[in-house]
Image 1 (cartoon, one colour):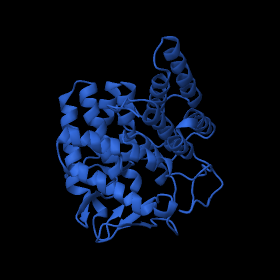
Image 2 (tube, rainbow, N blue to C red; image 1 turned 135 degrees about the vertical axis):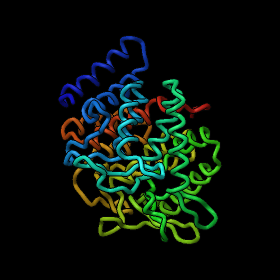
Image 3 (cartoon, rainbow, N blue to C red; image 1 turned 180 degrees about the horizontal axis):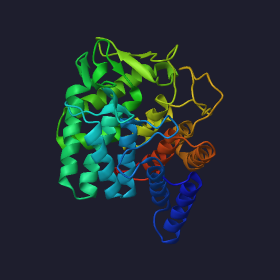
Image 4 (cartoon, helix red, strand yellow; image 1 turned 90 degrees about the horizontal axis):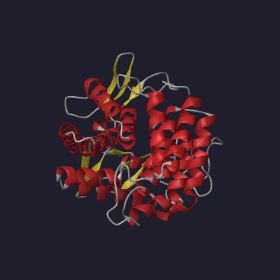
Length: 344
């Protein structure tokens, strides 16, 4: 691990180097942010540690590190993170247990965002690092997601929040859907179910955001396939630090309709950390992810808002803030994970 100030300085230096060398400054900044996250939170053995949350490890963090290692072009770090994940978190069904602490898995249930991000990272890494075994692991994990972390209702198949979330009514975290990931995995596997879950997820967001509402952290799906907001661990449904990921995931997409979803998936002009679904703020604090989400929704102010997210993260550093300031740069300003054939 390197000190925070050194990590921030490394980001600035790398970006300046990219500019002076004639490279793409956005890619240089994104790669440096990715490397800074890995330096601070990934141990040499590949375990990603939430140092500000008791020192545990979650599958989400492993997957974020894998995406960022691919973006940074760091094959060695990618392999170490995946090796640790496979050795310590992989379940008999091929999914990843979501939490590990004190030398063991503390909750064997899966989290579908982590599995989806990890599968995508493996497939991209297989090509980027010329390693067919990584791509094969990605396809296997992708198939495990379809087999064990989806449900059907109203004639459609959709992603659920994890292996635990399939029982009626199925539980969904709308921010887990990544159109870029489903596109990548559909191409890699040739499995038509990826198109089905992508279409269903978009339809559920339409249900949830009807009338101008914000996407919720959590939802349930009824027998007809219609999604409704629900509360999980909170008194009422809310737009919080789960739902805020919806905008950057959809803004990354090559499809204009997805980018339009991103544009309306954030509270306008108010990046505070938690809101009621009608946009009323529920807290006074801000989080870097809120600014990344705002950047996803507003391309004209994207650079400014990402810089503000970096500044907020530097002032109050957290694992989650570091992950999403880096991912925000990668997803919103580069094609390091996927490129659009006909960019908008």
